[in-house]
Every structure is written in structure tokens, then in C-alpha cells.
Image: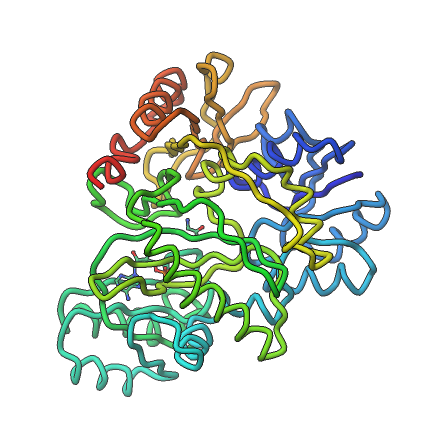
Length: 421
Ligand code: AMP
Ligand code: GLY
């Protein structure tokens, strides 16, 4: 079978890496891909959000399975269009993807189905929103309702910060149309965990729990990024917590979606805050997380293509999904300046020198005259598998030491919280 992976970041490299291990697969294409992906797939120069050209390509090449990485493509309805053309594609359709595309809709959905989450209110204009902030007069989280590349969430300590955040979102439109509605939430305290699950709309099978590191600097300091590293499994996620999340979050979500006529197929990602009052949903994503996918798929034993086909055919209940009894850590190396402005085109060395059981998933790289160069803010995700988290941390950093590019930045504390737990 020929497989097409849509996207070109670290998540997509991990998807391609895992799909390449399937005996069912003869050839993999990736659009647009990157320099690392090019070593195991044929990269095609089509943007991830150019649905029509992707559809044309998949039809012409007789692609047997298309796997969609980024949320923008899903929200754009790539799954609906491929299905209409009779092509097999892994991911939720446009309606179901609204669970990530509109935070206001997601909050409304959680309220309707009693799924635990922070209390909230949503406003279409600044005045009412500011009035609400004054009434609350405490720590709040202000969010642009639409897609804002992970940047439209402002965690506020004081009323003045929240008023300013409302202005940025809905008056100044700092996040564009994503800020046409503003969501204001109670601020939760606790540790975060990412629960990704496979679902065919009837059965839901959680993957190993993982934890992202969103801030740019050690000890969770500095601005939010797309994610500076991740590890799995996350010990904060106890088996008791797991039972609660399955019963109170994952199952009601799938059921609620179906009741609304939004049959959900693909990966459902619940961002969970483990609070003293139990787990609460911070957000839904409708896709694999980045960088969580890198350690999570590193631990998956079962053939991913087999799972994806079972999801598409709605027979997930018939598959036994197995995980390695091990741990995985991914340390992201980023370009200096990220998440602000950063340089591109710097030569990367040492990628051929990695220790055993360490994989460099490429996030923002390009080939330039045969050399691998930086081309994005997040450049590489150095990912190790070992018997436990401390061993995986050690191995991942041994890998990081081997790799060089100008002013490379990485956090030194990826996985540290797992050891505290
Ligand atoms: P989101 O994109 O909605 O997951 O928000 C991004 C990040 O903001 C989360 O990973 C949390 O660190 C933080 N956050 C979001 N909502 C809340 C909340 N209600 N309370 C505390 N922190 C939050
Ligand atoms: N790591 C967070 C995300 O993929 O949205």
C-alpha cells in the first residue's frame, strides 16, 4: 500500500518513522515533509493546507491511506473531501474538528455533557468580557476562541492582566479572527498531562500518557512555545486517574460527539490538568500532539497502520494495542530567538553520530546543497527509548550532545517532573 502523510514537522517525522515499520506499506509520501522525513519517504512539494492539490495527488498516485498531521488541514475539511472522493483517510471530519477549532464550542460541549473542566464564560465583545473580569476579580485565563497556533491563551494573575488580555484578544485582535470571541476561564492549578487516544467513534483506546513542556526555559519559565520536549509514560497519571479520565472524559466525549451527529474518528487528544478536585480538561486537540507523538509512538509496539485501518473501518474493538514496557524522552532543540524571531539556514552537524536507541526527529529542517540546515523555530526532537525515565533522559541528552548548530537552544530539565513524581 502507498501511504501519504500530510505535514512537515517532528510529529509527522515520527508518524512516517512508525508507518515505515509496517509490513503493509510499500511506499510513503509526505507533503511537504522535511530533511529527516526525506530519508524514509518521498517528499512532495504540496503545502499541508492545500487540500485540493493533495486530493489530486492522492487520487493520481492511488494512495491507500492518508494520515493528516496538522489541525488546519482537518479544520479545512480534508477528511470530508477525501471521503467524498472515495479515498481512505485517518482523522476527524470538519465538524468533529471544531472541538479544537472553537474553544467556545468545546467549553459549551463539555458543559452539556458534564465533562470536568474549568468554569468559563464566552463573549463576542470586549465590554461584557471586561465586566465579567471585574466581577471575578481574581486569577483567570483569557483565550482567543479560534485557532491561534497555541499562542492565544493568556494565563493571568491579576484583574489588570486579564483586562489587558481581553483587550489584546478581542479589541486589538492580536490573534486575528481567532479573537472574534473570547473565552474566560477560572485558573486551575496542578500538573498537566496529555492523553491521546485512538477512536473509531465507538471504541476509545488511550495511548500511553505523556507530558509536554510548553515554556521555552527550564523550570517552566519564559513564554509558551509549541512544546520544548515531552516524555512518556507520565507517572502523575495513576491508574485511578486513568479510570476517571476514561469514564468522565474520553467516553462521554465520543458519545456526546456522536449524539451531536459528529461521528469522531482519528486521534482525540485531551489536555488534562490534574487538580486537587480531580482531572479537568484544559483543551481538546483533534490530532496527534507535537512533541508528544515522538515519545508516544516510540513506545508503540503494534503496527500503526493496522490501528489506523481499524479506526477507519470502525473495528477498533478488535485490535489489541500493545506498548513497550519502557520509557521515552524527547528533547527539542530550537533555533536561538524562538518563539520570537529566529534565524534559518544554519548547518546542522552530528546527526550521523547518535547513540543506539536515539532518533533525531526533524521538526524544522531543510536540505541545502546536500547539507541539513535549520528551517524552523523547533529544529529537532532528539528522542530516546530506555528502560525507565531516568535512563531515557540520560540517553536523550547524550544524543543532544552529539548534535550541533549555531546557537542551538534546548531545555536541560525535560522529564525532571517525572522523577519528582
Ligand atoms: P490550551 O491551548 O487551552 O491548552 O492552553 C494552553 C496552556 O495554557 C495549557 O497547556 C495550560 O498550561 C494553560 N491553561 C489553559 N487553560 C488553563 C486554565 N483554565 N487554568 C490554568 N492554566 C490553563
Ligand atoms: N503539544 C501540544 C499540542 O500538540 O498541541
